[in-house]
Length: 221
Image (cartoon, rainbow, N blue to C red; front, side, top):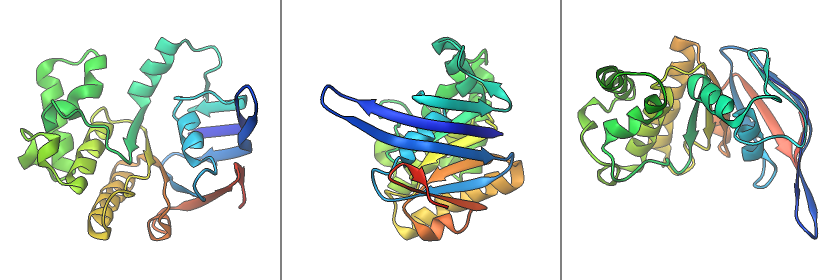
């Protein structure tokens, strides 16, 4: 489902070049749950951003479902991401002025989805993450674990084939972290959603199908 070939990423300033990723070759199959680990600054989030078409590699090629994106315009990339990939971030990225259900509906605003259908799909997504009774609340009224569950609902509302999760349990205590991880495992097992998760937590990584380790921008296993 995801194929990365000879990926390198270099960040250049006036005085220095930093090699963030070095010769990454990676195949992720449909229905896999893969975790990426490594020390801070080793390129994990950069790799996830390239996988999610949020950033371009300096060299190499990204393919998703056999599709290459070198000639895609920004608009075409945005449409592909919206239809295919759901993103979950460590810091939730919820909009405080919007209710829970309005936050979850956001990805559907960029599709030709009617208001009633958006509301239906958002309600179903919140039901899956156990927050059906919080639809009218606002983010400021939720705990960290509840905010992350809203973020998961937003990621899955469009029924993406792929979920990319950057430290989804990083800001949570162990109980809330395990609850969030259980939701991701259920999505993977019951709906065959392909999931790639960056994490610092070895215990969470061990629950996934495969662990990829990075060190100084290179794969080490």
